[in-house]
Image (cartoon, rainbow, N blue to C red):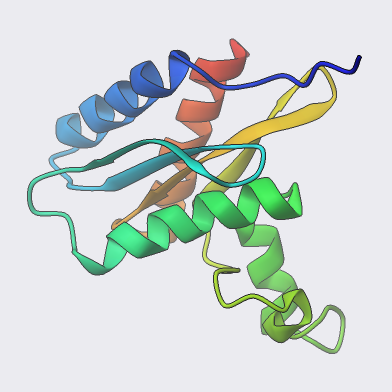
Length: 138
């Protein structure tokens, strides 16, 4: 029987860490952690974070888990379809290409993804990477 790596209790710890770091920066973000299928495990919206970032964070996490790559890489390809592809290529409106969704790899498999929304793309990516490091221990 094949056993797949998963994200479990570390999801809450990861979201708490990202929320704490955003608060230190005096910023408000939305954080989502999903499983390998892109289904929500844990979520937080900080006071003052944009309402529109709720869906964006969940879609970033979903996209990173399903595509098995950071959402920023997808965005770079769709912004330049002559070297990549149109976002419609994926066939689902939940796919997004904004930075801030990062897959979590464990034992060579995607266990899920962490996503942050509501800040600049660079800040979203940095905080999501912090969350991935929390989960993987690297």
